[in-house]
Length: 132
Image 1 (cartoon, rainbow, N blue to C red):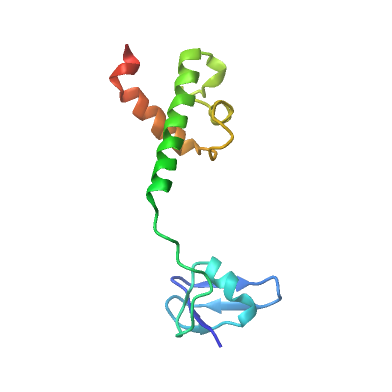
Image 2 (tube, rainbow, N blue to C red):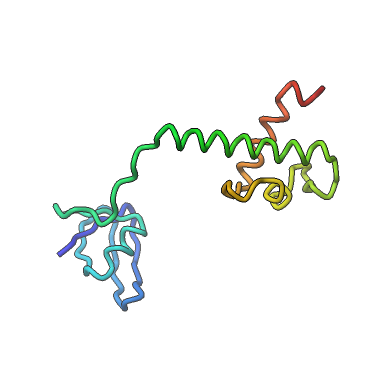
């Protein structure tokens, strides 16, 4: 039977009808039906069983290249919005709107978050070539 350990005190209410309370760092028996839900909640196996979820593979050079391509596409989308200069493309804080940046990016790239856009915008603002 699997035992799970939670990093903090929590109660798991499963869709299968189980309700189990876990204390922080105390191994607790969990029915096999809720092991996946426990893992999703951040718990860890404490017995010698193989984990249900496989470890993430290490990033390869191709993934780093695709990240660079995505960052370049994000920068280009922001530059298009900046050169257009339409006030409707910016928020009240003079940041490019997320939906406007997404509209300028190719659909093959994943959608940027507001944080991604803010970091890219600040990076472009610091670029000397932008001031010219």
